[in-house]
Length: 464
RNA sequence: GCCGCCAUCGUCUAGUGGUCCAGGACAUCAGGUUCUCAUCCUGAAAACCGCGGGUUCGACUCCCGCUGGCGGUACCA
Image (cartoon, rainbow, N blue to C red; front, top):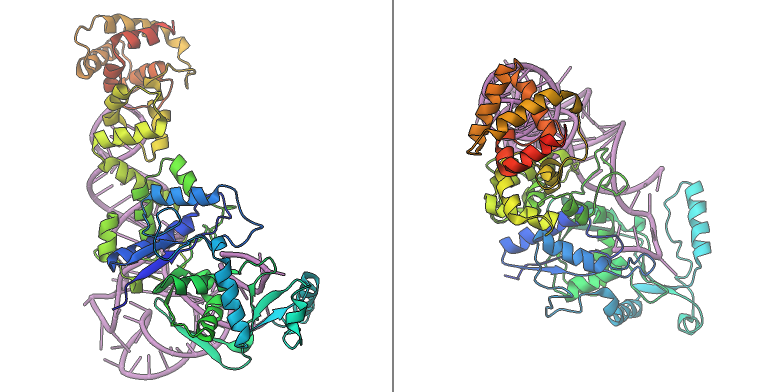
């Protein structure tokens, strides 16, 4: 049995790893692990005009942050490198030339102007927009390539049908006459995606091409290249593409898409992966929360649905909260320290964990909720200054407490509220705002214990 | 326009011819616990299974058509 080798092929043309790529990576990763295969990351940097500085580096580090470690890639090595397409240019050229020799490709000298004019006319006539084969019959092409700019195009047969069996969707077929003479090698010497993937997937012995649905219509062109070069086909599987709430293809215009955004928001890799696993797939026992390991164990590529699911950040938030609540408090402390930075005293952070653990959904919720432990309120959400008489009484009573424990403090305040004939809810709200500045806070008694007697008194006195 | 993919609650989904007047989760709403919030618990509302034809004793489940959504249609991936 052939070894399973899969890959993802991100392009360094965006700020960072796209969440859609995380999804495809997860599927590939799980499939590889499940089948004892290899998971490869290949950088497809062939579009020189859209290259984004630093993108490649961020994509790779995001992949590691999220926990989808790859077996082969530009920074981890492997025996099928180089894993960056810009370093494989001679390879693409060689195969493009081989295609020409065999009559399955040809040089094309058409200018971009002619091409766009051609497209315009076709659109007006409402006929399919395709290359018209203008350069196909040109003689003495070899002489011209010395002086003129050229591209190499795939010579698609006008007859016949190209079909393939998609692991997720079943049989898919296209009529050859509707397939465009795709550019294979661009005039700058770089390959287009179509030549690049085929050559690299073949050379890197990729067994299963698992990618998003947007590639379905170019698959027949890829298959033609495999066949023309006499190469064995990989197995194709086109998964769903993630959607915006309005069902269009997930995009940065309508949804946060960069992995780094999710990291900055305090989403946990485990939760993101768990949530993504539920897109187009469901646990056989109906579970919602499960680990990556369990996903790998239960996942079957054939069970992936072909419908494009809408990305629902509300459910992701809920799931993130589930993960936060499941943490041991020591681990949550570490996560929070990593997130908020070293400026915050660790011992104090540790004490606050039990109070906030079931109150936050994201790591970024921590400071808004627990920030008052580290810093006195700058402002107050209700008019607290008009309550000076009551505050004085609170101070007196609190000063009399000798054992500063949540329970004792709470009891004393309860008694005071009764004496003053103020509803306890109202009473505690005044105290809460006085100490935290906010109407919403962790449990007050425990918070006061952590704050300490002196600090509590100082905060109250500062309001007089 | 042309080609292709897809179609169950608002969202993610279960469901592979009868056990479904369609189950779970998120979100929503109501109630309980509670010093706020959150957690937790209980309950409610929410899909005439996109529409129309078949096939069948019987279709959410199979077939066809339509409609709709999405993707592709680049010297972008």
